[in-house]
Image 1 (cartoon, rainbow, N blue to C red):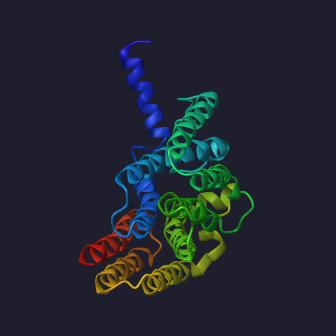
Image 2: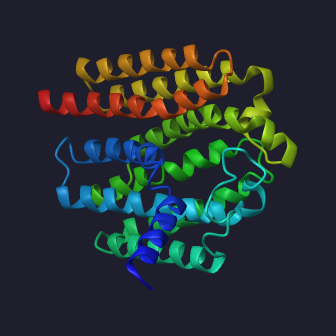
Length: 290
Protein backbone atom coordinates (compact mmCIF):
# COMPACT_ATOMS: atom_id res chain seq x y z
CA UNK A 1 0.00 0.00 0.00
CA UNK A 2 1.62 3.28 -1.12
CA UNK A 3 1.48 6.64 0.65
CA UNK A 4 -1.22 8.04 -1.64
CA UNK A 5 -3.48 5.07 -0.93
CA UNK A 6 -2.94 5.43 2.82
CA UNK A 7 -3.76 9.16 2.68
CA UNK A 8 -6.93 8.43 0.69
CA UNK A 9 -8.01 5.76 3.18
CA UNK A 10 -7.38 8.10 6.13
CA UNK A 11 -9.52 10.73 4.42
CA UNK A 12 -12.33 8.19 4.10
CA UNK A 13 -12.05 7.27 7.79
CA UNK A 14 -12.05 10.97 8.73
CA UNK A 15 -15.31 11.49 6.86
CA UNK A 16 -16.78 8.29 8.29
CA UNK A 17 -15.99 9.54 11.81
CA UNK A 18 -17.22 13.05 10.83
CA UNK A 19 -14.04 14.66 12.07
CA UNK A 20 -14.50 17.10 9.20
CA UNK A 21 -17.76 18.19 10.87
CA UNK A 22 -16.87 18.90 14.52
CA UNK A 23 -20.26 20.33 15.56
CA UNK A 24 -21.28 16.95 17.02
CA UNK A 25 -18.16 16.87 19.18
CA UNK A 26 -18.88 20.36 20.47
CA UNK A 27 -22.54 19.66 21.27
CA UNK A 28 -21.45 16.52 23.12
CA UNK A 29 -18.61 18.32 24.87
CA UNK A 30 -20.33 21.41 26.30
CA UNK A 31 -22.60 19.64 28.85
CA UNK A 32 -19.63 17.54 29.95
CA UNK A 33 -17.55 20.68 30.47
CA UNK A 34 -20.41 22.27 32.46
CA UNK A 35 -20.39 19.22 34.72
CA UNK A 36 -16.60 19.18 35.09
CA UNK A 37 -16.58 22.86 36.09
CA UNK A 38 -19.30 22.35 38.70
CA UNK A 39 -17.85 19.14 40.13
CA UNK A 40 -14.40 20.71 40.29
CA UNK A 41 -15.69 23.99 41.76
CA UNK A 42 -14.23 25.83 38.79
CA UNK A 43 -10.87 24.07 38.98
CA UNK A 44 -11.26 20.49 37.74
CA UNK A 45 -8.19 18.28 37.50
CA UNK A 46 -6.76 18.88 34.04
CA UNK A 47 -5.88 15.23 33.61
CA UNK A 48 -9.54 14.35 34.09
CA UNK A 49 -10.55 17.15 31.72
CA UNK A 50 -8.23 15.83 29.02
CA UNK A 51 -9.50 12.28 29.52
CA UNK A 52 -13.07 13.46 29.00
CA UNK A 53 -12.14 15.68 26.07
CA UNK A 54 -10.33 12.86 24.28
CA UNK A 55 -13.02 10.35 25.21
CA UNK A 56 -15.70 12.67 23.84
CA UNK A 57 -13.92 12.91 20.48
CA UNK A 58 -13.44 9.14 20.35
CA UNK A 59 -16.99 8.22 21.33
CA UNK A 60 -18.61 10.77 19.05
CA UNK A 61 -16.49 9.37 16.22
CA UNK A 62 -17.47 5.81 17.13
CA UNK A 63 -21.11 6.89 17.36
CA UNK A 64 -20.99 8.35 13.85
CA UNK A 65 -19.55 5.12 12.48
CA UNK A 66 -22.21 3.06 14.28
CA UNK A 67 -24.89 5.43 12.99
CA UNK A 68 -23.71 5.02 9.40
CA UNK A 69 -23.64 1.24 9.74
CA UNK A 70 -27.21 1.24 11.05
CA UNK A 71 -28.43 3.71 8.40
CA UNK A 72 -26.46 2.40 5.42
CA UNK A 73 -29.65 1.24 3.67
CA UNK A 74 -31.28 4.65 4.12
CA UNK A 75 -28.48 7.19 3.67
CA UNK A 76 -28.37 6.74 -0.09
CA UNK A 77 -32.01 7.89 -0.26
CA UNK A 78 -31.42 11.15 1.63
CA UNK A 79 -29.95 14.11 -0.21
CA UNK A 80 -27.73 15.24 2.66
CA UNK A 81 -26.26 11.77 3.35
CA UNK A 82 -26.07 10.10 -0.06
CA UNK A 83 -22.34 10.72 -0.41
CA UNK A 84 -21.27 9.13 2.88
CA UNK A 85 -18.40 6.59 2.64
CA UNK A 86 -20.45 3.47 3.36
CA UNK A 87 -23.08 4.44 0.81
CA UNK A 88 -20.43 4.99 -1.87
CA UNK A 89 -18.58 1.76 -0.96
CA UNK A 90 -15.43 3.71 -0.10
CA UNK A 91 -15.19 1.57 3.02
CA UNK A 92 -16.57 -1.86 3.83
CA UNK A 93 -18.91 -2.65 6.71
CA UNK A 94 -16.23 -4.87 8.19
CA UNK A 95 -13.81 -1.94 8.26
CA UNK A 96 -16.51 0.24 9.79
CA UNK A 97 -17.23 -2.30 12.53
CA UNK A 98 -13.53 -2.62 13.31
CA UNK A 99 -13.10 1.15 13.40
CA UNK A 100 -16.06 1.64 15.76
CA UNK A 101 -14.79 -1.14 18.02
CA UNK A 102 -11.25 0.26 18.04
CA UNK A 103 -12.40 3.78 18.91
CA UNK A 104 -14.63 2.44 21.69
CA UNK A 105 -11.82 0.32 23.14
CA UNK A 106 -9.41 3.27 23.23
CA UNK A 107 -12.09 5.39 24.92
CA UNK A 108 -12.71 2.61 27.46
CA UNK A 109 -8.98 2.44 28.13
CA UNK A 110 -9.05 6.11 29.05
CA UNK A 111 -12.06 5.64 31.33
CA UNK A 112 -10.22 2.84 33.12
CA UNK A 113 -7.84 5.51 34.41
CA UNK A 114 -10.75 6.87 36.47
CA UNK A 115 -12.67 5.43 39.42
CA UNK A 116 -14.92 2.36 39.44
CA UNK A 117 -18.21 4.30 39.37
CA UNK A 118 -17.16 6.18 36.24
CA UNK A 119 -16.18 2.90 34.58
CA UNK A 120 -19.61 1.43 35.39
CA UNK A 121 -21.37 4.49 33.98
CA UNK A 122 -19.29 4.21 30.80
CA UNK A 123 -21.00 0.92 29.94
CA UNK A 124 -24.36 2.68 30.05
CA UNK A 125 -22.96 5.49 27.88
CA UNK A 126 -21.75 2.94 25.31
CA UNK A 127 -25.14 1.22 25.28
CA UNK A 128 -26.89 4.54 24.66
CA UNK A 129 -24.51 5.49 21.86
CA UNK A 130 -24.80 2.10 20.15
CA UNK A 131 -28.60 1.89 20.39
CA UNK A 132 -29.49 5.47 19.43
CA UNK A 133 -29.36 4.93 15.62
CA UNK A 134 -32.06 2.26 15.88
CA UNK A 135 -34.51 4.48 17.81
CA UNK A 136 -35.27 6.29 14.54
CA UNK A 137 -37.10 3.14 13.42
CA UNK A 138 -39.77 3.15 16.15
CA UNK A 139 -39.49 6.13 18.54
CA UNK A 140 -41.51 9.23 17.59
CA UNK A 141 -38.94 11.59 19.17
CA UNK A 142 -35.51 9.93 18.86
CA UNK A 143 -33.97 13.34 19.59
CA UNK A 144 -34.92 12.88 23.26
CA UNK A 145 -32.97 9.63 23.35
CA UNK A 146 -30.08 11.45 21.68
CA UNK A 147 -30.21 14.01 24.50
CA UNK A 148 -29.73 11.26 27.07
CA UNK A 149 -26.90 9.72 25.04
CA UNK A 150 -25.21 13.10 24.53
CA UNK A 151 -25.65 13.88 28.23
CA UNK A 152 -24.11 10.65 29.49
CA UNK A 153 -20.85 12.50 30.12
CA UNK A 154 -22.56 14.63 32.77
CA UNK A 155 -23.01 11.98 35.52
CA UNK A 156 -19.68 10.45 34.48
CA UNK A 157 -17.92 13.79 35.02
CA UNK A 158 -19.37 14.16 38.52
CA UNK A 159 -18.54 10.54 39.33
CA UNK A 160 -14.95 10.99 38.14
CA UNK A 161 -14.31 14.04 40.33
CA UNK A 162 -16.60 13.53 43.34
CA UNK A 163 -16.94 9.75 43.44
CA UNK A 164 -20.75 10.04 43.38
CA UNK A 165 -23.48 11.63 41.26
CA UNK A 166 -25.29 14.51 43.04
CA UNK A 167 -28.89 15.56 42.21
CA UNK A 168 -27.75 18.61 40.24
CA UNK A 169 -26.12 16.25 37.73
CA UNK A 170 -29.52 14.82 36.83
CA UNK A 171 -30.90 18.36 36.43
CA UNK A 172 -28.07 19.13 34.01
CA UNK A 173 -28.80 15.91 32.14
CA UNK A 174 -32.48 16.84 31.89
CA UNK A 175 -31.55 20.28 30.57
CA UNK A 176 -29.42 18.59 27.93
CA UNK A 177 -32.32 16.39 26.84
CA UNK A 178 -34.51 19.42 26.11
CA UNK A 179 -31.62 21.25 24.47
CA UNK A 180 -30.94 18.23 22.23
CA UNK A 181 -34.60 18.04 21.22
CA UNK A 182 -34.40 21.73 20.26
CA UNK A 183 -31.22 21.63 18.20
CA UNK A 184 -31.72 18.19 16.67
CA UNK A 185 -35.26 19.09 15.62
CA UNK A 186 -33.72 22.00 13.71
CA UNK A 187 -31.41 19.43 12.12
CA UNK A 188 -34.32 17.07 11.40
CA UNK A 189 -36.28 19.87 9.73
CA UNK A 190 -33.65 19.77 6.97
CA UNK A 191 -34.30 16.07 6.27
CA UNK A 192 -38.05 15.98 6.94
CA UNK A 193 -39.17 15.41 3.34
CA UNK A 194 -36.67 12.60 2.79
CA UNK A 195 -37.43 11.02 6.17
CA UNK A 196 -41.14 10.93 5.35
CA UNK A 197 -40.43 9.12 2.07
CA UNK A 198 -38.27 6.41 3.62
CA UNK A 199 -40.21 5.97 6.87
CA UNK A 200 -37.63 7.29 9.34
CA UNK A 201 -39.11 8.91 12.45
CA UNK A 202 -38.01 12.28 13.82
CA UNK A 203 -39.26 15.04 16.10
CA UNK A 204 -39.65 17.34 13.06
CA UNK A 205 -42.20 14.89 11.64
CA UNK A 206 -43.90 14.25 14.99
CA UNK A 207 -44.22 17.95 15.86
CA UNK A 208 -45.48 18.81 12.37
CA UNK A 209 -46.81 22.36 12.06
CA UNK A 210 -45.91 23.02 15.70
CA UNK A 211 -42.21 22.30 15.17
CA UNK A 212 -40.98 25.90 15.56
CA UNK A 213 -43.12 26.51 18.63
CA UNK A 214 -41.99 23.30 20.33
CA UNK A 215 -38.32 24.01 19.53
CA UNK A 216 -38.65 27.37 21.28
CA UNK A 217 -40.48 25.76 24.23
CA UNK A 218 -37.62 23.25 24.55
CA UNK A 219 -35.10 26.09 24.57
CA UNK A 220 -37.14 27.83 27.29
CA UNK A 221 -37.33 24.67 29.42
CA UNK A 222 -33.57 24.12 28.96
CA UNK A 223 -32.80 27.62 30.21
CA UNK A 224 -35.31 27.30 33.07
CA UNK A 225 -33.68 24.08 34.28
CA UNK A 226 -30.23 25.67 33.97
CA UNK A 227 -31.51 28.60 36.04
CA UNK A 228 -32.70 26.08 38.66
CA UNK A 229 -29.18 24.61 38.64
CA UNK A 230 -27.86 28.11 39.25
CA UNK A 231 -30.12 28.53 42.28
CA UNK A 232 -29.12 25.09 43.57
CA UNK A 233 -25.41 25.96 43.21
CA UNK A 234 -25.86 29.52 44.54
CA UNK A 235 -24.53 31.07 41.33
CA UNK A 236 -24.22 34.84 41.01
CA UNK A 237 -24.93 37.40 38.29
CA UNK A 238 -22.12 36.25 36.00
CA UNK A 239 -23.74 32.86 35.50
CA UNK A 240 -27.14 34.37 34.79
CA UNK A 241 -25.53 36.75 32.31
CA UNK A 242 -24.40 33.62 30.47
CA UNK A 243 -28.00 32.30 30.51
CA UNK A 244 -29.34 35.63 29.21
CA UNK A 245 -26.82 35.43 26.38
CA UNK A 246 -27.94 31.86 25.67
CA UNK A 247 -31.56 33.05 25.62
CA UNK A 248 -30.68 35.77 23.10
CA UNK A 249 -29.03 33.11 20.93
CA UNK A 250 -32.20 30.99 21.13
CA UNK A 251 -34.25 33.98 19.97
CA UNK A 252 -31.88 34.35 17.03
CA UNK A 253 -32.54 30.70 16.20
CA UNK A 254 -36.26 31.47 16.09
CA UNK A 255 -35.49 34.15 13.53
CA UNK A 256 -33.62 31.54 11.46
CA UNK A 257 -36.14 28.67 11.63
CA UNK A 258 -39.43 30.54 11.60
CA UNK A 259 -39.86 30.10 7.82
CA UNK A 260 -38.53 26.51 7.91
CA UNK A 261 -36.07 27.26 5.10
CA UNK A 262 -33.66 24.30 5.08
CA UNK A 263 -30.37 26.20 4.94
CA UNK A 264 -31.42 28.44 7.84
CA UNK A 265 -32.58 25.47 9.91
CA UNK A 266 -29.17 23.89 9.41
CA UNK A 267 -27.49 27.20 10.26
CA UNK A 268 -29.49 27.34 13.51
CA UNK A 269 -28.44 23.79 14.35
CA UNK A 270 -24.75 24.65 13.86
CA UNK A 271 -25.13 27.85 15.86
CA UNK A 272 -26.07 25.87 18.99
CA UNK A 273 -22.35 25.60 19.62
CA UNK A 274 -22.48 29.23 20.77
CA UNK A 275 -25.42 28.55 23.08
CA UNK A 276 -23.44 25.78 24.78
CA UNK A 277 -20.41 28.06 24.99
CA UNK A 278 -22.48 30.88 26.53
CA UNK A 279 -23.59 28.63 29.38
CA UNK A 280 -20.02 27.37 29.83
CA UNK A 281 -18.71 30.94 29.89
CA UNK A 282 -21.31 31.85 32.52
CA UNK A 283 -20.18 29.01 34.75
CA UNK A 284 -16.52 29.77 34.14
CA UNK A 285 -16.81 33.49 34.81
CA UNK A 286 -18.81 32.87 37.97
CA UNK A 287 -16.15 30.55 39.38
CA UNK A 288 -13.41 33.03 38.46
CA UNK A 289 -15.21 35.76 40.42
CA UNK A 290 -15.72 33.60 43.53
